[in-house]
Length: 392
Image (cartoon, rainbow, N blue to C red; front, side):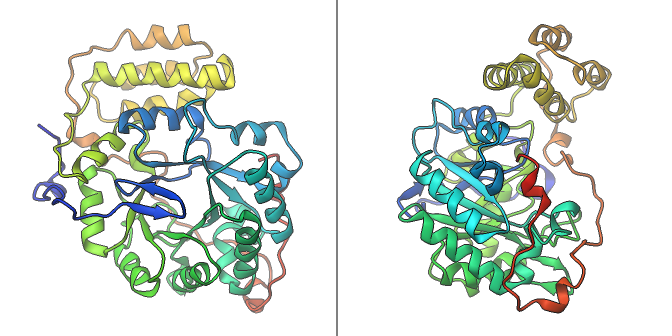
């Protein structure tokens, strides 16, 4: 039996032909599910794990890389831009920057040297140091600058499809998502994705799915993707039906739950999802995730990466918290194994874990913007973002 929260008890499986494949240029994604790019999360090892659970049917976007650092060939950025041995098709990467010329150069390098098949652009990052420098979610505030950046990247990408991802706006008094969607459509991007929260909301409250509906009504010639509050496979069905969007983008809901992509593939094709994993099966996923990270980054840096995932994997399971302090200090695979073997295997997956908060707290913010930024919204001149100078 599949596990559902009360919110989704009455949601029915997809009917035959109810949802069409997502077409982004030459890329076909069936069912229409996309892994959201998340910094420090969606590296090659995590993408490999998600791909295995879904039999490579979804689109898995890399974590963000900065254009300046990539052009200058910073070692860490080049590593983050690396694809796994199993990523031979649908190589997808998210690119960040504020300077159209640098972004264009990075795009040409990604297409010609790295052979990427898809570039997503980040216009939704709400992090203070990014928006305070005029980047991320601040860029759509200046539509002419957004247009200039998108035009440069689309032109440089040639036949490689470009998509853009953005938020509703800065806050409820300054919404930019409809303009951003229309600009993207007009400049030749192949799809737009909306995280249905403002930058001020960060990850708090409920995502405003009505905004996804509005964007779908405004942008007609390319796919519109919805992002926000897809924690269960049943949420994706509700979002698609409620908003009419063309696909779902899954972020925090898959943290510590890479099998969510297998569940999504099932319900969106009219099949019952597999039963949720037992604690023993979750532990097996932690082991495999840690091994993949160690192989990719090296054992010590790989263990630094797995530390944050352990709490997400074990979220909601009773009598596991006492092991987390030790797990958050592991430096070798052997040390991690010493903790994992203490966990019983025959514990059922807890319903409370389905919608448990992962990664981000429920705080909001007053968005920081450069001095005078709102007084010159018609300008198309970029501000050189120091976030592009830190090596990615």
